[in-house]
Amino acid sequence: MISVKNLEKTFHTEDGDIHVLKGITQDIEKGEKIVVVGPSGSGKSTFLRCLNLLEKPTAGEVWFEGTQINAPGCDVDKLRQKMGMVFQHFNLFPHLTVRQNITLAPVTLKLKTQEEADAAAEKLLSRIGLLAKADAFPSQLSGGQQQRIAIVRALAMEPDVMLFDEPTSALDPEMVGEVLQVMKELANEGMTMIVVTHEMGFAREVATRVLFMDEGLVMEEAPPAEFFGAPKNPRLQEFLSKVL
Amino acid sequence: MDQFMVSVQMFFQNLGQRLYDSFIYKDRYMYLVQGLGNTLLITLGAVLIGVILGTLVSLVRIVHSQNPKKLRFLNAISGLYLTVFRGTPMVVQLIIMYYIVFGAYRGNPLLVAVIAFGINSGAYVAEVVRSGIQSVDKGQTEAGRSLGLNNRTTMIKIVFPQAFKNVAPAIFNEFIALLKETSVAGYIGIQDLTKGGDIIRSITYDAYPAMLLVAVVYLIMVIGLTAVLSRLERRMRKGDKR
Image 1: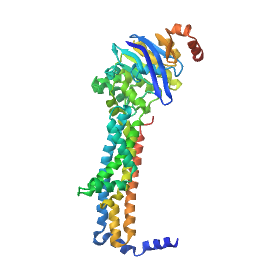
Image 2: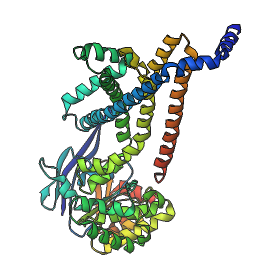
Image 3: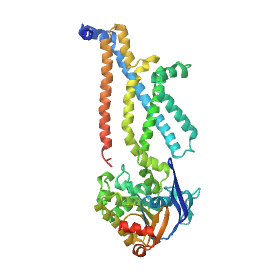
Image 4: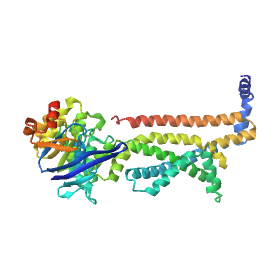
C-alpha cells in the first residue's frame, strides 16, 4: 500500500544542513499496524511526514496505492484525502465547532453533502462518546477529547491509512488512555496504521511490526514479541533499557 | 508661571462674547461642521483603500515567501512601496501627490487626499495583515492540507478567518490613527476639521475657542472609537482560548 525507497531528507538551516533521513526503504501492506519508536531526533516524525508530503523528500521515492506521490505533477491533494493524519498538538480548527471541524473537508471537497457529512460526523462522534460536544468549540474541550475528535476528523474522509504523529505526547497522563483506546478500536477494525509514539505498551499490544529508528535509519524491525523480547541491535537494547 | 496665569485669565475674559464671535456670528460653526464632514470622508475613504491595498500587498508577500519563484516582480514592487510610503512623512506624500502626481489634474483635492491617505495607510495595513496571517499556527495549515484541501482553500477556510481575529483590532487602530493624521489635509487646501478651526482663528484673531473645540472633537471621536475597539477585542477573545 505504501512503499518507500531510499528515502532521504535534508533540512537546510542557517547553521548548515541537517541530514535527518539517510535512506529508508519500507513496504507497508494493507492492514498492517506499524509502530515507529526511537530516541528524539532520530527522524521518526520526519519519516511519517514524508509519507504524505508534509515534508518534501530530498531523495528517494514514496509510493501510495500504485502512484509515486513525490513525482512532479502528482496530485498530492487527491492522495492526501486517502491518508488521514493525527498530530501531536491536535490542530483542531479553533474557529469552528466540533461538527464543522469534522465536516469541513468532506463537504468542501464535494465528497459528501452537508447532510451526509453531518450524519457521518454524528455517527463517528457517538462512537467515541462525544456526540454531546458536537456544537462545542475546541477550546471548550480537554486535550484528550480534542485528540479523539482530531482522529474522527481524519476518519470522516474515509482514509485508507492513518498516520499518527506522537498522538499522546502533548496529553496529560490521565488522558492518554482514552486516546489509545480509540486507536486500538481502529486497529481492531482493520485500519492500516502507522504510529510514531513513545507508548511502548501500545506498540506491544497493537503493532504488527515495530520499527526502531535512530540517526535517520531503521536500525531494527520485528513483530513486537521479538522486538521487545529479543532485541538484536545494541542501540535498541540500550533504548529499551531506558524506556521500559 | 506668571505668563501661564495670564493666558488662563485671557481664556476666561469675555468668554461669552468670544464664543459668540467664533461660532455663532455669521454661522461660523459651519466651518467646523463641514470640516468634520471632510475629515470623516477622507478617513473612511482612506481606510477602505488602505485595507484593500494592504491586503493585496500582504497576499503578494505571503505567496512569494511560501514559494520564492512566484510573483517575484510584484513582490519587488510591494517591497519598494512599503519602504517608500512608510519611510517618508505623510505631509510630504500628500503635497507630492497633489502638486506632482496629480499636478495636471485640477479637480477635487478631497479625492487626491483620499487616495494619498489610502495609499499611505495601505503600507501599514499590509504589514499588520501579513503578521496576522503568519501568526496563525503552522499546524493549522498542515491539518488542512493533510485532509486533502489545497493551499488556496486551506488559506480561505482555515487561515484567514483566524488571521482576521488577530488583525481586526490592529486595523481599527489604524483607523483611529488615520483620523488624527488627516489633520494635515489643509496643506493642499482642504477644509478639514483642523483647517476649519484655523479659518475661524484667522477671522477672529482668537485661537482659544475654535482650536480648543477642534481638539475636543478629535478627542471625543478617538475616545469613542477606542471604546468600540476594546469591546471588539473582548468579543474576539471569546471562544478563542487555546
